[in-house]
Image 1 (spheres, one colour):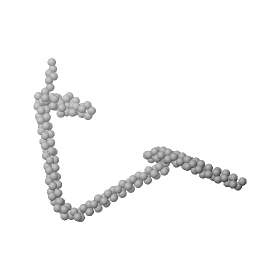
Image 2 (image 1 turned 180 degrees about the horizontal axis):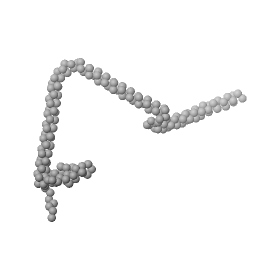
Image 3 (image 1 turned 180 degrees about the vertical axis):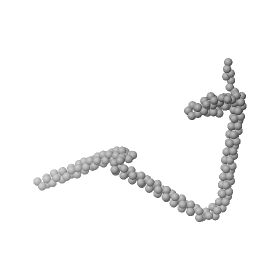
Image 4 (image 1 turned 30 degrees about the vertical axis):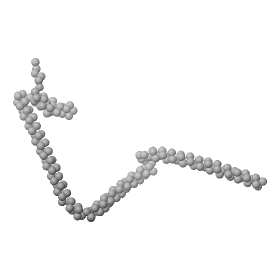
Amino acid sequence: MTDTARTHHDITSRDQYPRDRDQYSMIGRDRDKYSMIGRDRDQYNMYGRDYSKSRQIAKAVTAVTAGGSLLVLSSLTLVGTVIALIVATPLLVIFSPILVPALITVALLITGFLSSGGFGIAAITVFSWIYKYATGEHPQGSDKLDSARMKLGGKVQDMKDRAQYYGQQQTGGEHDRDRTRGTQHTT
């Protein structure tokens, strides 16, 4: 009967090698297939355990080094910011009558240039759209514009017809009465 019990080493060494079927499936198969060639099983287990421990130690040392260096950099940044604030505060207080109006002026200039550029881009876009529409290229949204134009044109024609009808009714009736009165007076 075969021994089916797995040791901790079998589990951890299996997990060290990726077994994803898509990308790394050949790596896992090749390791399992060719790992024991020319080696004694006890030597392989001892080597695998040492490899696992050394890998964990390397990971820990790398993490501590990276974390420590980032911690040192963040503390240096904090100290530099505090020193810059200590040096700059008296200068800001002394020069505030000059700096505040200057900053307001610069902010207004930047806002003006940005809004001018934005309006210029919008105008170019609109002119481009109008040119495409006028040349018959039918840019995006032109079908809605045509539909609205047709509806508006229909309403304008309807109002024009109504005004003409009511105008003729009002003026036509009075002219007819005047003509009939005029004919009565003249005859």
